[in-house]
Length: 121
Picture 1: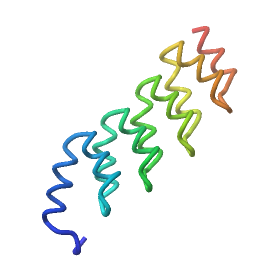
Picture 2 (picture 1 turned 90 degrees about the horizontal axis):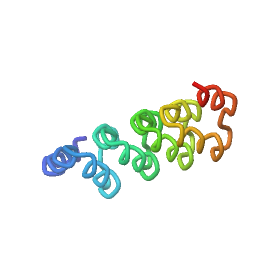
Picture 3 (picture 1 turned 45 degrees about the vertical axis):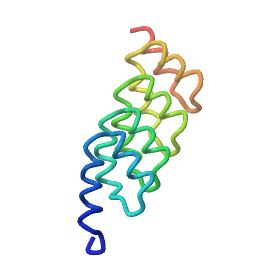
Picture 4 (picture 1 turned 135 degrees about the vertical axis):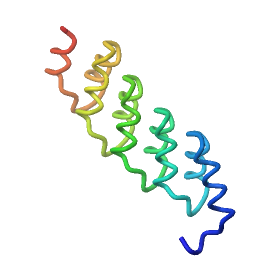
């Protein structure tokens, strides 16, 4: 950290005030503190997904937890992010019958039995 200027740290601090800026800072600025940027980016499910998809060194589990607060995002995360926890994503889709069904039909490895059980509840 001794080679990082105060100006750089100030710019990063400013970028990490909103999810969009934090994501873009991590994506485009060499030397960005990925963990710090990820923390802010993951306050929004969209940017949590983009962070996992596009930022080298992203903590996939952390992004997944942030993304899977919503059924549609959980589906997208499971479909496009390598290394995700399929059970965690599928569980998040049970809140919405449409996404739960799509998950069971389109995501390889989805638990069909659990889908049927939750679809009957």
